[in-house]
Image (cartoon, rainbow, N blue to C red; front, side, top):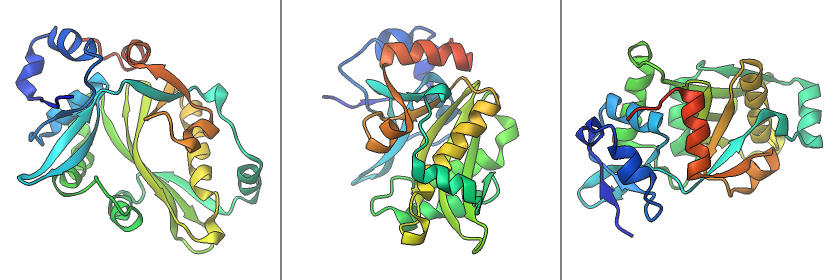
Length: 237
């Protein structure tokens, strides 16, 4: 499988995305050395989820238009008995954008392999700091803090486009005293999104066990893009 280059000017042709990329079910990964905010936002609006890849020449952006997507419809949310117990204890504070930079730094501390680094990390900082400059895109951090210790015990980064939320990456403390707090953060976020009237939660790759336990369903690219374009109002590329 070939990984093709993407450049901002490719999308000046309104038909390029649908005819060359979305309809091509032989390819899902693309690459770029473009780190501009506008390019990243446009990719996200089209349904790409971007990570990174290390090459001998340096870090590159790795946008993926997935073959399948994990989507959570909030009526399908499953809350385990252990998480229900944590909800009753209320020994936590759930927030958005209260510890953005701490969350960003946390990926390197909690993940052995961290793709969220270098130019990508700097790009996310700019997107967060310039949030008012980007139409129909907002980068957010999600935090779960222990009331007793004020420790950040679970968190994630993602973005809002239209009536959708997309997860990028997350982490949770591995200490035994914080068991199931990662799932608690997901449940609290799902409840928040539902209360705010979001259409669905885009969880990205669908086949991780925790996503299935949460209640996500698997959509093909075609099914996902149909729902995505309707909920994000991003029809034209």
